[in-house]
Length: 124
Image (cartoon, rainbow, N blue to C red; front, side):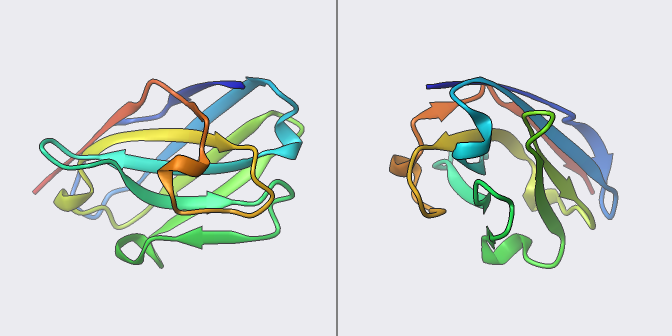
């Protein structure tokens, strides 16, 4: 498995931006698919974005397309989530996750390592 530590969450006003980071250790980072999920109070954890091991392919959930960008730096064992034009409905705990699968996936079950989460709160 991969050990994951997220950072970068916080409180921001509607329309603002945040960049989340997730540093990985353990399994060779450059060989794993990475994803971001989020969980709002009272709701199930949902897919946000994912990126292939090389960084050449990305996938986004419809609510964040055009506003969020996932990227990775394999030299730094880090994956990022740049969040722009934030809305109150983006408020959630954000988790990064690692998947041993060859293809990027939106499914929680494809990911076997999870970080502890970082809180993002968007005020109206």
